[in-house]
Image (cartoon, rainbow, N blue to C red):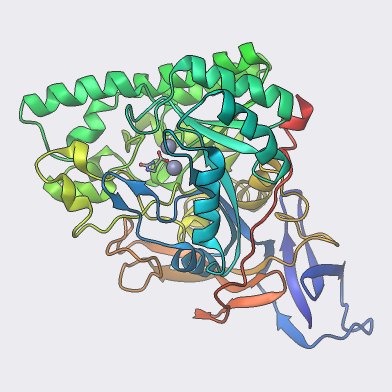
Length: 466
Ligand code: URP
Ligand code: ZN
Ligand code: ZN
């Protein structure tokens, strides 16, 4: 099957130009101008006049079916990748979880089995390490070689995912040997738990107090600490879901002194605020960690960070729980609300609308932070994240002039609310291709369950520089 994308503007992280893209099978085979006039033939010609042809977006941080707070994130690998596809995302990197007392391999096998035959677009895995010991450290080397080269550790969630500093340091030391990358959830969990317990003892049990308990300085302190540990180990480190100026300042300072520190933020930290956590128990819809922050100065600081490359990636941390029946587990005690927000479907459009239309970033930087940046950081480039000959034909025809209203009534995520209900935004993915197959066409799903394959990733381009 040959498909020709004709008459569009190709938008990449490096620049934009008018051009046609020819796909043969699963791969991009030719890029040029007026290819049809030059005699190129195809089974289908997709007219991209007045539209942009961009590499399929990559969401480097999702949690399909994550067990959390006594329940499970709602989307599975079918519903989650399908919703992602509607929003122009053709690759996700999810997190397999090592349970305490179990091996990395057991966790990985469980997540592999959950995804196998389910996904409609490609997926990879990072590995959550909850138990650092001689044997799990040795296992890391094999996983790096098998295409799972990144490991998330937590200074948050004591008793669940939390690792003490010496364990984090040992994992970092291991990556200096095997070329892997440590991803850090950086908040001071034990101290947060103390503050949260004090608030609950004072009768402050509403979701709003989830935001109050998790001071910005607790994220800043932990961010600085883990970057310092990484520097001491000689390892690169990637801070996930950075939410606040205090933490960004630590990344900026680290990068200025030459440390190999990288970071992502998420749409919720650019567009939502602690005010959303108010409004009684309705605020439970917005409970995630780190929490939503004050608008000022954080939103603008994060945009500045994206523009200046102190933040390299915007991922969703997609971890959806229904308001009814799941978030409600925390009525009367905000500590029992499952942490996480839905977002995999709306990231690309929210960032286009708020970032490009909003004048914060160029359309090329937009492509970089939604696709090319994560492809490079997470060992997928140039197979993913590129409009280039030889790359996978993960291609989106994007209409910058379309507009739509976000609503749980029309979204495709398996969750009963949207954090952006009623928002009118510009920009929409019209055609979404995954490895040569059109999986979304003008708002209709045309893909198939099981088309998505496990993506064996290389070491990070950045870790290789270490
Ligand atoms: O609230 C969040 N972020 N839930 C998902 C788990 C995590 O920490 O990434
Ligand atoms: Zn986290
Ligand atoms: Zn997460």
